[in-house]
Length: 282
Image 1 (cartoon, rainbow, N blue to C red):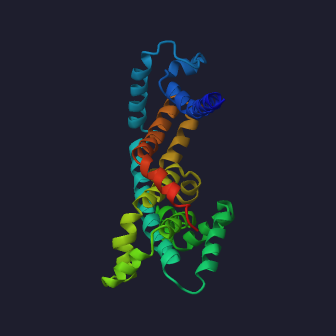
Image 2: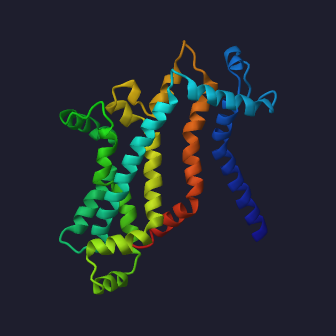
Image 3: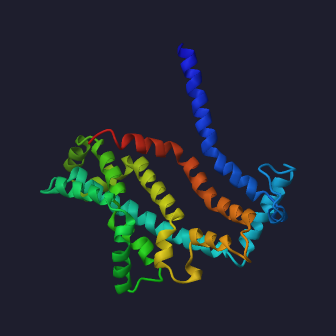
């Protein structure tokens, strides 16, 4: 009976994995197709000659990288610039605020922590117009500022994640550091940050994925085409000469999805460790 149950679990997990991977596989199949087949309406789920896929995919990727309509290289640089600034701000500010909530005893910390958690319930469309008005008054509309400046003031979910991780670290380490003459900044820098590396990687990866895939933010705050990010650049492929070049669109999507997948695979162990540890103590 136990063997049958284990087999059913593996079969179910295999089916779920296949369903999850199907969109990625289909994206690669379309990216490896030929433009003429799409124009003639003759593209099928599987290519007629599987051996043609690598060559077609390489050709389509080269077309995307050198196409003047998309200017993929510029959009990639813009996205990387925004992602680096935003991720750096989120990691630094969220870690500092989380340390204050987890380790510093001060009046009103718990009510303020609950208030901060409540901000996660506010959807972005509610604050979209106030944010646009504020950044317009600051003269930041049409710049990258609105996309990365808020990250340096903390992120509620990242603060919660880091705070939960800091709560799992024994306070005896703080006491030992104080005996050696460390203050709060010394404890934060020399004790907490090295031990919180998995949680820091989780925060960085999650915010990198958010910034990398963000479409609404750049659409609202950017006004010049040479400032577009990858998400906005992909939209340019949706209508060109009255048709959508699906093979080029999927090739550009492959280039956009690829870095995130590679980054996750490289940090998978630390990601799982950070997620599993951050919720063990409240």
